[in-house]
Length: 194
Image (tube, rainbow, N blue to C red; front, side, top):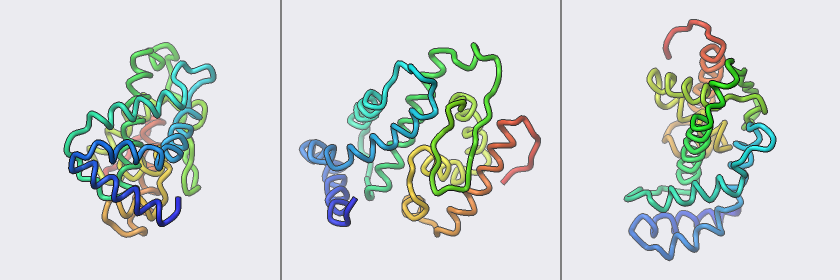
């Protein structure tokens, strides 16, 4: 996304925050590609033949965004972080409603790598990951948000730092800690707090 369109997105988000519905209609074409990329990362972790497709996930996130009231959007990164959170909730709710975790009877391993962003692997159990993320949030909310933005939303270190209003070094430390913490949680290992 160019600097000009990033600025346009921020202006439109702020107008939408003030109640300008036309701003939302102008905003969607500017962020649609980013939303599809985030949805594609989410869907990469789902089994083949999944009922919910990338476009449907984007559309569901859009419908939930339209219902969001009085959000003071700061910028594109803040918007994408919120979309990542919504998509995570949508897929987790869908997985729970379908009972995938109960049918499999096991917890699948989630692979985290040192890449700037990673996509969930095909054997990711989103319900188990969501439960682990909630436990991490109880220990350290910011670390959980870093994972959500980077792993699910595909935000860069810089974008995550902007949203959280911390340094990029802090985001990297949180990212590294959270990956280890989540791996231990998903593997059933004991560990200390943050």
